[in-house]
Length: 244
Ligand SMILES: NC(=O)c1ccc[n+]([C@@H]2O[C@H](COP(=O)([O-])OP(=O)(O)OC[C@H]3O[C@@H](n4cnc5c(N)ncnc54)[C@H](OP(=O)(O)O)[C@@H]3O)[C@@H](O)[C@H]2O)c1
Image (cartoon, rainbow, N blue to C red):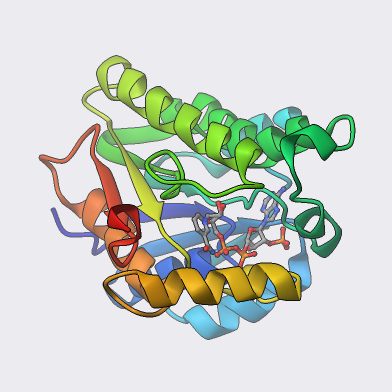
């Protein structure tokens, strides 16, 4: 299935993995819609993407806003929602031991990482074309995790379970999951020094001895959209991290 001419919605498309996906999709002739909270960031991204690109400001954790977003969008062919667990610097610094989490912090991770995707499917799926697809975002954590990631591990595991149910319920729409390892993106550029040192050790210990790039994950997302026989697939692209 060619992506040329298809309409692809990428929420979280103004940075990192989402921006790389939008660029790669546009270069294959897709019409791309990128969403994110900050208009300026979206406009900068659109200038980099080129081709046929629409920008729409959206907070994917806001259910009524997501309902309105998809109602106004009309029909499209493929969807991915790529909101990080802790999109802002302050949130990232708070990824701590489970017992030391501040009240509400676990829920915040779920609001960003899980509910944004649920809202995307709930309001996006009715507007997907037959033969269209959804790529949900997990991570390597359901297969191999490290301390301090309890909330994002749980959210990613929930997404993988959800995807299996949705692949049955939403067919012929296909529902797949991309599960990246440790990827160098603008969003991970601000992590604190001690976590950065841990990332460097992880990168060194895995078979592919480096962090991944956004483009390598974008290639996996587009593969899942293109391959008409792929559904309920979890695609790990993690440099072999899960084997270490
Ligand atoms: N990087 C990794 O190592 C890694 C590993 C596994 C999984 N992932 C997942 O991959 C996805 C992309 O991560 P990344 O590192 O590429 O992130 P990133 O560079 O920080 O980009 C995040 C994007 O999401 C948008 N965004 C943030 N909060 C949003 C919200 N509430 N509503 C709508 N858009 C929002 C941002 O734009 P605004 O800030 O303007 O909203 C931006 O476009 C995330 O789901 C992340 O959990 C990443």
